[in-house]
Length: 229
Ligand SMILES: [Zn+2]
Image (cartoon, rainbow, N blue to C red; front, side, top):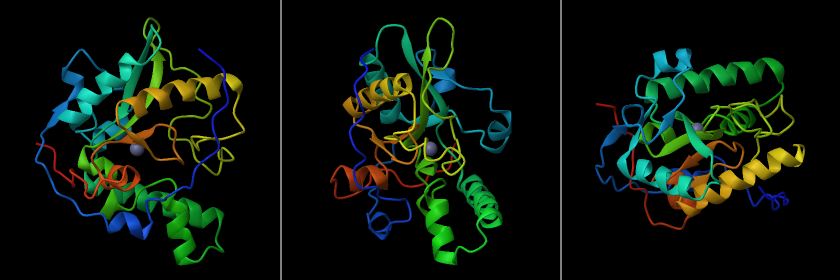
């Protein structure tokens, strides 16, 4: 893998940005499919806590599944994408948002209500806009196919952006060169497949949701929130 630098971080549009809420949704009705039931995909089933909350964690919209296969074609031989989280019920999103709000408020009690909302939104999407509830968002990482070992991506998956001094930001400068290189591989493959990254989380990518529409200049999202069947 080459070892060139990541480019500078472009403007970060947060999930709390009013431009995001203004994006219309023209639901295309695509079904959710379960990647855990298809051996072309690799799914992390070890996260028992989240799995118990989100039985649909391994489901994504059908076009998203196809695009993950496209992304894999751009990876070096022996490297694969591991899905850590796909669809998430709205109720779970609310739970995660509230839990992180309480954590942040405890550590930074001087934040105003609006500041707290903005800070929490860097890490957990507001439930009304939750990309994972559309089935269009995926949390992914890279693994070695033979060992199943995750590559060094520079921060823990779902790492806290504050506790990691911002190392979760996709274009973080405070990560090792090998992690920069691995992120570059992930970024290039996911972009080639048409996914858009959420820049405070190197692992979060989406297609078809509001964030994708806004960042890729589409007039509308094609996926709104869905309940898993
Ligand atoms: Zn995510």
